Image 1 (tube, helix red, strand yellow):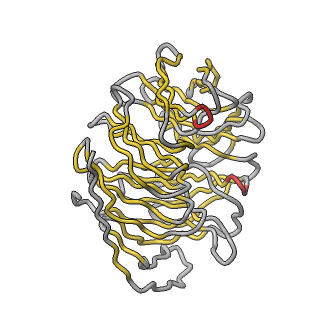
Image 2 (spheres, helix red, strand yellow):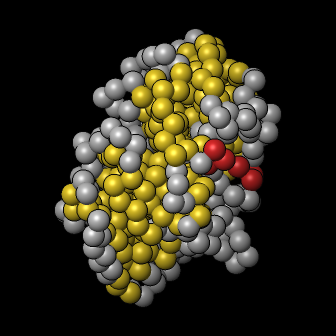
Length: 342
């Protein structure tokens, strides 16, 4: 398969902003790649250690970030562009989910194996479940009102989000990393890097129905779905590659280099672009020309260790978590996505 690469970068002078009022801190980006431009910085003073996953309440203008190393949940007002709360007392928070049907924010804790529920408005505790050792990613399935939690040496826990009760387990071959729910079907696709596979789960039967081997690379961590083209997008770390997989066959359609040490990737339906954030300090911007042809159109320099991000399609923005390292402060860098087709 022939793959075209298009790399475009523009350099701009970085301008500082010292206004620390309610007005969002805005700085022109030092680098502007086609379709992706840094427009804002949200400082997170006092937050130490690495970050993990995000969730968003778009109607409520809130973004939730698991500050794993700081044992807090950082709550951001997206409209005002500032942190409004830091929920303390967590134990290695990893996965986060927002449940609009109940108005709850759910946080998975890898250290004590708890799934903690908070009122999304007041952020007061609203329940807790135990028994999720090494809890990781959390996703909410709105039609069934179920939460799925990756945990342990190999399982997806199934939770009734309304009753806040565990109702089952789906056994896997090893610890799951990112997983995605099929929009127009009943499958869950699960990255299992230790087993060098992608497990395909039937959520009606709560069982694994297929195991797709990951052969040409290792450490398959982040994942996204292009539902329209039936493509599974998988980010791998060893070596750093994006795999585009046919959801019908499990076969790799395209493989191309991407950001190193990646932990998050997203597919933008409006622009047909893929954004891959990596701890090496870059975001890869990849264009989809067709379901069989993809090409790198830009690489945005960010910061070392900034590997987790979140794409909020409703506001066309990417939020990138940057950890405190040396002179680099803990912050969120906000990138605006253009609406044009690549």
